[in-house]
Length: 398
Ligand SMILES: NC(=O)c1ccc[n+]([C@@H]2O[C@H](COP(=O)([O-])OP(=O)(O)OC[C@H]3O[C@@H](n4cnc5c(N)ncnc54)[C@H](O)[C@@H]3O)[C@@H](O)[C@H]2O)c1
Ligand SMILES: [Zn+2]
Image (cartoon, rainbow, N blue to C red):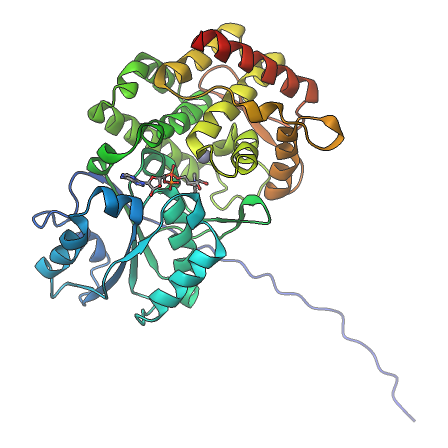
């Protein structure tokens, strides 16, 4: 007689582990000077007692502004030969938002691949946030992740884009639609690079400094307000201090917020960014990230006032701070109409929700230096903020 087949009950096994990440962020000047051992020490920081091979990718905007780098970098590796080795001539990559596309990443993968890196090889990326994003993404894909050393060369990259744990490129008309979480091996911030920035890129980092100050540090906010005119006058020492304070606030947040790889729906460091990302993309990336963030923060500050989180005086202080620094608070594209006759910028809210997943979660200041989360953005507040900002900016330019 055939035995009746019985099925075993289903089984499951809970897998769980944690991977610690640690990376230093250095703040120094003249890091490729032959008598500065910092980079060599960083390559050696795990004391592996072997030759370290590095491939160096440089933002063309940086090599154009600092032509001596082309000989200085190989000379640096010659100086420390025996401990380090430069794998090939430098790879120069056109800078700016156009770097953040598949063609650049594919090209980088091919060129880096031709140098036969192994998983312990280093990719050193020197440039603005866009080049760091593109190179970081390529480095994260090769052999499932090469060691990435970032050398951010803009204010925004030194205090935000270049110090965090992720990368991204643009696709399907969405900013950072593609990317990975991939913490760097180390970050080296060199203030001397900042001297060659044009004004817009010099001041762009201050928008991110205001962002993090507004939600985390009222003293830093006061500092930024007090020095707005000095930032405009390109005071390098003050910018260096502001980059440091802003970077530390970002780094502390990533470590302490309990969600470094952003699995949840909240992203406090993207305060003001739903409108900023949409504005950048609507402008074909002619509006820079920092300038778009400045406008996005002003829109959200206005909404925060309507929600009873900021006072009128605080909103005006914020707008004045940006204006005094030389950052914009309004752009004509805010009035462009999209689907259903609504301002197109409003589509940024749903793009933002989709990018983070789950319920819409926007961070707003709750008083200066503190934050809260909201799950709804009233259309009326967005529309009113656009009129308010246009009015404010026209008064300022009169
Ligand atoms: N991955 C992240 O966590 C993160 C966070 C914030 C922003 N970002 C991204 O960063 C990008 C913006 O970066 P950015 O503001 O650094 O601008 P950018 O990378 O677009 O660079 C701006 C321009 O300045 C040039 N440049 C760079 N350094 C220079 C220097 N020292 N001297 C002269 N010219 C120089 C570049 O060639 C480019 O033309 C955006 O794409 C944004 O999405 C990424
Ligand atoms: Zn930003």
